[in-house]
Length: 356
Ligand SMILES: *Cc1c(COP(=O)(O)O)cnc(C)c1O
Image (tube, rainbow, N blue to C red; front, side, top):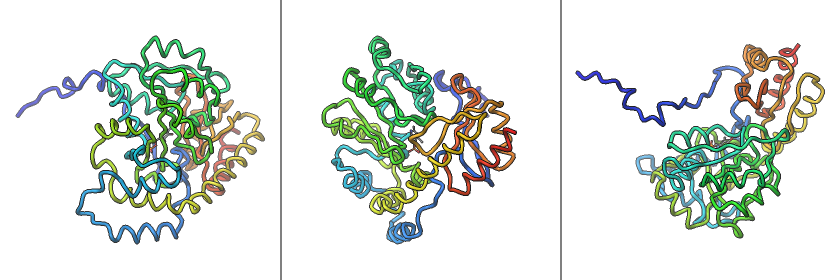
């Protein structure tokens, strides 16, 4: 029987990490994970079910994801050669780091932003350079460019719109970054369907641009499907590090059908956008709360009360939001995902109760 100290064997880069924490509730209203509150439309579900019946689950999935790439290709007019499918776009963030960085290399991103860039970067032994956003949750390229060059930064990750602040950064600043930074600029457009803003058209002119999209926020979070749009040379490099069967056959088929029948999802997106307007309006009526404008399917807001207390009070009333207050730039800030009209009404009602 061997009894060795297993934790002594863990690499330093992993030892000092913390696992990504996601809170969940069994019952109650989940407004913490930026999911689509609506299940797939019944017609879409039926189409997917019919396709699934013919699926050979004893066979490996298509490693090239041909059908899914065709569906994406015809939706966004990009050659399948430029597309790589990920097990969620999270996986592609990791692939990008593997392709462009050796241990000790630097990646950069604004602060605050999506937590996974830092978690994955640290897990791969990379240096992290952050640039703090200003009070309007924006940044100036001029003031960061020198630092990016001095640190030999390999990749800059831009969440567009930014999670958790909700805004799309200034187009001019991003344009300037793409044109002047001699490394990879990743525009993480996970919330594109809610913002309608994209840098896709810039890919022809600038070969340092990579765009990531996800189906998690528009209805298929449970199936883990994301995709990246790359210059075709880079798609080949990503394919070298991607696991051959990273996307399973059920996810490939369901995602392709969702994209081919997009009008059904579009209806859901439209009502989430309507609710976004309504929620923001309702927020302005609450004096002790400052809500930030949003281009995404969530809203960041700051409370005059203790944010932790508001978070717990909501939770006691079966409403789970995301508590961001531990971040030094987000004191007393919570992030709420836009739900169905009924869910939003309950959230507002219990929020008002919580801050009384
Ligand atoms: C949710 C999210 C992702 C991850 O999406 P998956 O496709 O579910 O992995 C990526 N980037 C940002 C900014 C997100 O908020």
